[in-house]
Image 1: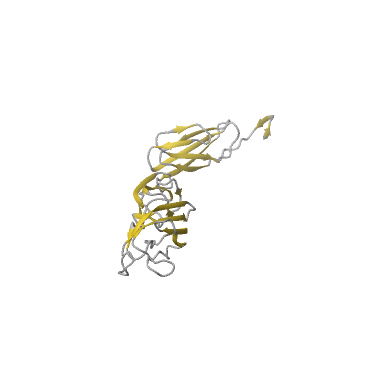
Image 2 (image 1 turned 135 degrees about the vertical axis):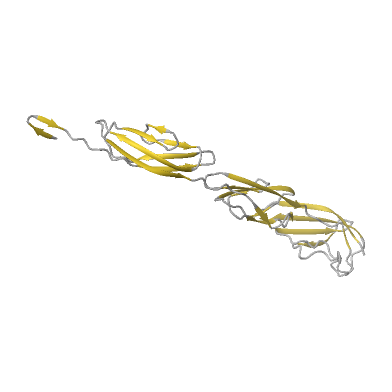
Length: 269
């Protein structure tokens, strides 16, 4: 404030114009937030040009661009007293490349009790993932391993996302085969079907219990390991006679699910 010959002069500061573009790019739109960091008096006004024909008079506007590219953006600050300051910046709008989802798996078919499958993620241009295994389970791991416990065809899907949340999907089928129990065996030491039941392929279970009964319902063999199948001999070492026998097999899977199988088979000599 100055005084001269009875006249008072008031000096008002010139605004300092500044702003920072903040990109928020999604698969649906390219939105830039222009964060106003200017130093200016209250009740100042603003005028923005975004380089694509768009304008705004907000203090910190957001603007949606139709396409990526370089845009010459400008802001003018005008104080209540007519003082003006300008600032301009080149805004480079970049969209990340679209993702391509793809994966391979360790097998296309598994047994219900040997159903651990590894998945190798071969996606490109992606930063995050969502797997659905077709049995109600899912994960966001990049290269997961999953144990299936439901017989049937499972549709395994991978959804791959890029940094803008654009996504692509890839899906394959995985067959989970039922538990196969033979209906006959021939313990004649010829190297083929000499025992019941040998657990082939090797089972991946928490527990296994098998009981064998003769035609009169007598328990003639019990084992808690599929590595110790019945060889067709009685406890006294005599060979069991040909005929029809029954079994009861109880299994608890690695996921804690209980299964019970009963049926009959023939011993052939």
